[in-house]
Amino acid sequence: MKTVKIAICDDERTLCETLRHKIENHCKNFKFICQISGFESGEEILALPAEMIPDILFLDIQMPGKNGMQTARELRHRNRDMILIFVTALPEYVYEAFDVNAFHYLVKPFDEEKLWEVLDNALQQYERQTDAAELYRQTQDEYPLETGPTKERPKTDEQTAPRAILVKRGGLSTKVLLADIIYAEVFNRKIILHTTNGDIEYYGKLTDLSEQTGADFYRTHRAYLVNLKYVEKYNASAVWLEKDVVPVSKKQFAGFVRQYMQYINRQRSR
Image 1 (cartoon, rainbow, N blue to C red):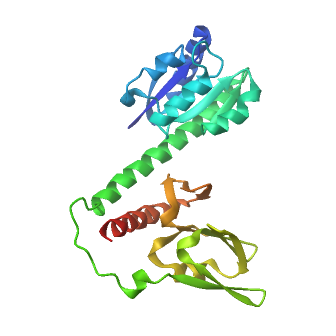
Image 2 (cartoon, helix red, strand yellow):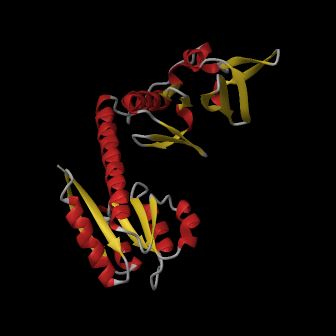
Image 3 (tube, rainbow, N blue to C red):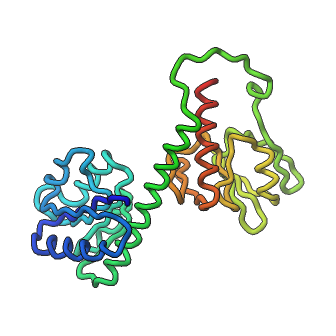
């Protein structure tokens, strides 16, 4: 059974304890072991060692000393996967919450039904993240990264020559380097290539493009094809590519992790 660390940080002790008991009772209905703790200041939770940082945090914004936003920014540097839920009486902070990748924003007063909805979604997100981490570990065992010195391999013409595709639109054929394509998506029978030099649209099939691009690209979803070169991070439902985020379907995720590990190995051996 999985264990999830849940914390409430609010300078109002009564509210903190009330919320703690409600969450504790609700968690009894789940397949998780919930370790629930309460904190009354940002400084208190920031003093925790790395292994004690919560997986899910309910964080008040208005607190003496370090406020919730300051606390969230510091915690994000230490744990980018922490599921952060702001609890506040001030709705005007909602836009700042996006800067620290908040999972949700509860405005006081809120009813129990809304609390349970947000908590249930947070627990489901935690389960997806832990499943993704476990799959990542298994894939690393299957495709370990090389750590020792590697022999210099002669580059083939295919490796040294720029790889490109020809895109036909409006009677013109345009050469597009594969290395410049961040990802492609299909919309209304059109393929949109999101490249380092801007977007290119043309009529085509993503299946055909996927066959042309080869092993450095992966189709994470029926409507998306990503260049593994630009992957910054991922979880079981999404891939971050520079400034954009694209979805990963459940049935494609295991294949994506496997092919990405193989891509990393190829880069290390070149």
